[in-house]
Length: 239
Image 1 (cartoon, rainbow, N blue to C red):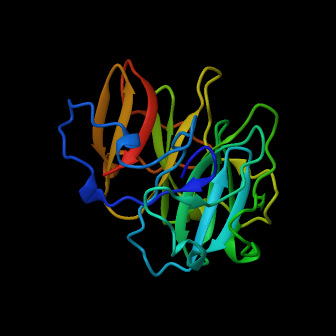
Image 2 (tube, one colour; image 1 turned 180 degrees about the vertical axis):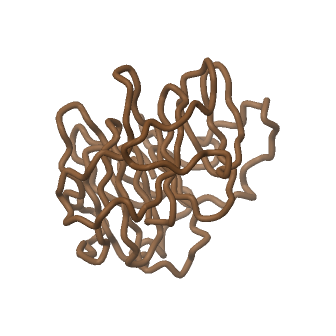
Image 3 (cartoon, helix red, strand yellow; image 1 turned 60 degrees about the horizontal axis):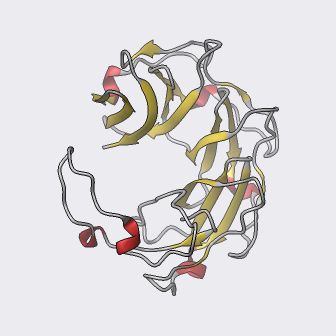
């Protein structure tokens, strides 16, 4: 899913295998992008039977569209998937049913909203407001609810929160604080923890791989613990 709101589909077997030290290849050699088009979100389509594609944007919009609308796409040139408003950008996409969803912001606010309250609309539309953001805030992660949620900050702090601590709210609300942040810190990523998964925490200059079981479960009001030293965290993925 790209900055121009298009969706491309690529088989993993088309991507050359590399090592943790190799650079990889430019994705433009595998797909046909437009000028100035960049990747904004990537999602697995392993759940082929999921009835909906749900989109989340930086400015707090949510859009739900039937998966059927994307079934006849051209694999290399892509199709229009969502209309991106000026000043906004796509941050996450999930293939899902009617599960509740969690949206997490840079300043640590969290909202849990029911997906079944969001009407499915067409492909070339922008969606509706999922969270009402405060000034200088933005959504950094959004996904279907699981039992626990891991929250990781720029300064390398992390914690897991039991998702039951967040009550269901109507979409468009402010949400509640999900982590206590230092004045120079902010949330980089949040991920649903389903099993005993491992997290790859990519930082500068260092990165680490840690089991999710090594991250403590804390209340939504706590600050987390230091999980990576002397690095600025840029990105987190599940393995």
